[in-house]
Length: 640
Ligand code: C2E
Ligand code: MG
Ligand code: MG
Image (tube, rainbow, N blue to C red; front, side, top):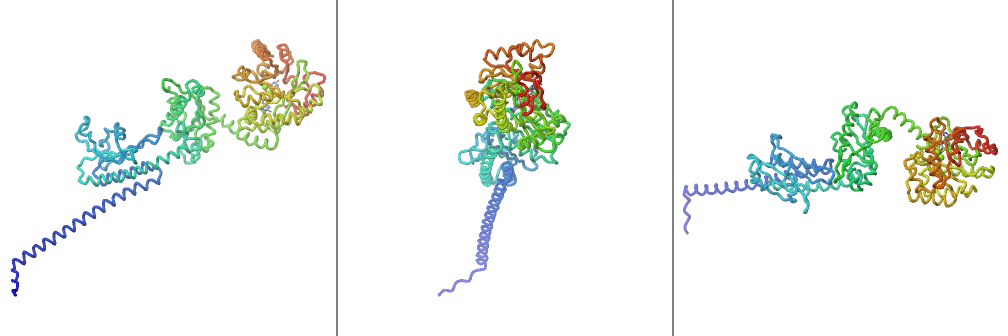
């Protein structure tokens, strides 16, 4: 057996060298593997961190904007990009598109890349496809492209086929880790598309709850929610309440589509006012605007400037519309101590502006404040008084041409110390709808009273009762009347319902049907205050009528020295009435002379202070007893 030759020293050295080299290589390889893994891990961590930063924004307010900012910050920090920006498609046709941009620290914002591209942002947006990352191929061809212009990349934001926005990224340097940068963009963009979708859905729900569908302005609920946030710390505010003039005519002349666009444009104009805090549409043609003020003293000036801008003509298709309106202005904290009071102050100022005519502005002032206070007091008192039945009927005799009492008009009176007169509380009751309840009660009571008078006094023929348009719009109105007539035994022909011409009632089908049914029963209808409204003659066309009551404003003047013109008017009214087959009652007869003139002119019945003021039921009963022999003026013990 051969024993192996001992290794020479040189061989040993060579072997050990090879072994060392192998071990070095292995260690180097191991280090390389460790480094790559650590790097990969680190990148994954970066990505995850960035995504989680974006995702947490989903729960805050201003979600989309903040989430995008977070995403862009991460991109600037971990990649070669120096400037990034995002444009999202607008959620609807009202809100502007969300734009977010971010700039690397140290970049000069004035010369930031991409400024020259602002105009083409939309083109980019349209060209982007969801989750597609690409470089801008046009760089080489763009003529206006500066030499030092950075490289540009684009990535579409979206889900499925739908592109919702685009990210633009700019860098000056070659990207030595392009794969990672791209991965990072795609991961973030995927996250942003979720945020966009949830924000879009949230806003859609929000719009349904808090926005006016037509104009996109806030609705009433949203506006009042905003008003409630006004506290002692709130800076001064102007509340402008606008009522567009002639909106009905625009609707009729140009059609609904143009009218709708008109409202839409007005809302946009109000919203584009740089100071405006919230704009709401409250009624069909009513808008309100809250304007924070730097100084209360500037309120009028600021508002006048705004109204001037608002008045500029609008072109809708080929129609030119010049907006005109009435406006009420109230200022916080000068005119009101909280949001609700501010609203009512502006509302009251608006009703004064309306009286002044078109395109007028009225600021809340001491006079309006006093009126508002009275209304508040009235509101409290009227409701209590209705509950406590403080409203009673007074009666004013209606006499024949030979001055015999043939009937009476029931007039509502509020029987309480310092109670306001009918001129004040009746319009308020109309406005609040209280007249329905009070009117129904009154009608019931006076029909019973009249039935008794008719039984006891031969000459008494009819009772006249004023009815409000609100009562006529009630489904049960006819049955109330029928019921009261049947129970009291008063023949229908002894009831005259007076409808005031100055109150606006339209030829609504149900109202007309009710009036026709009443007339068919024998109830007579009188048009009250004839000549005071806007559509006196048109009423005669469509309303079934029996009697015309000439308004007292014409009659009272007949006593004046130069009453020639009034006589002509009254004569013409009587001729119209005769031509329409109507009887005429003249109200407001204050003197024997006027009574005489009215009889000469052909009035059938007379009513006025000359014969008697409105009196209580007992006083009217005694007037009836004594009027068997006519001798005006009648002596009434109690007057109202
Ligand atoms: P109207 O129906 O035209 O009633 C006539 C008004 O003229 C009454 O005012 C009466 O007091 C007043 N008057 C009568 N003769 C003369 C006169 O010779 N000179 C002058 N200057 N005035 C005279 P009143 O009672 O203040 O009522 C005002 C209005 O309130 C009524 O006008 C009527 O429109 C409304 N009203 C009154 N009672 C009721 C009611 O029960 N229901 C409804 N819906 N309205 C009512
Ligand atoms: Mg009347
Ligand atoms: Mg009248």
